[in-house]
Length: 82
Image (cartoon, rainbow, N blue to C red):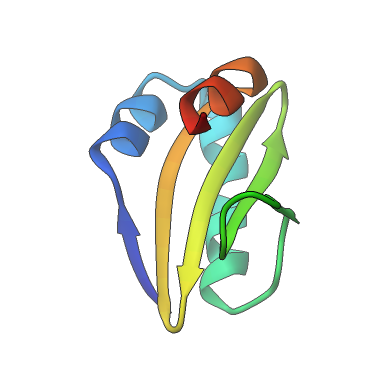
């Protein structure tokens, strides 16, 4: 699976704690192997959310393309998606 990330995700990732970065990297490895993780977001097709501590990692899957959208607090995620 091909991995892409948005500028928004890159900024959020760099500001994250070391523990969150380790968790994110493990989740990314699972996702790249095609192991489904997280819950689908009803209002957005092919978009999923994974809880990592008190934040959410939001990503999309389209065919063989995995795109990491952002990593924010849960309030920030849902405000951002509106």
